Image 1 (cartoon, rainbow, N blue to C red):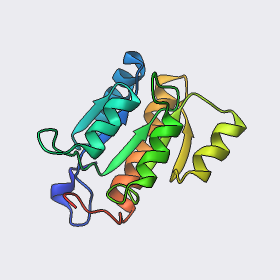
Image 2: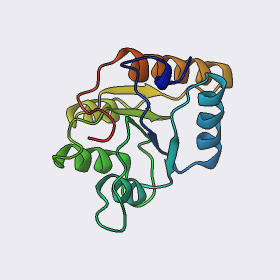
Image 3: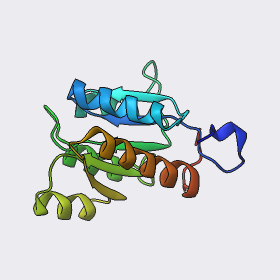
Length: 153
């Protein structure tokens, strides 16, 4: 995929990956690079850091990502609470949030959608399947989807 700068209407804002597992974060970085997604990737290692990036004020300039990839199993503030707070804040209410997690628990899926997740994707264990999942997510959410929040909004 070419960068968003090459094609009008293609999202080129940053992606916020909220992931505490360094191996999963590395896998996501590798999958994005393998699929030539040129968006900057910002990694938050827990829910607190994610919310500080998204709702930062003053010296902590607020990150305005094109997309959030959110793990549910986070230390401190878990992904469900992060999603709840994203949707409760007017500045981030419309931000596309994709739950990208290892949990396939029905209650997590239902709660994620109930709180406003745009999509729920279970992380494949196999690298090739994971790479394909990231490629498909990137193609849809960064190329095809029209976001209600243009970069810099």
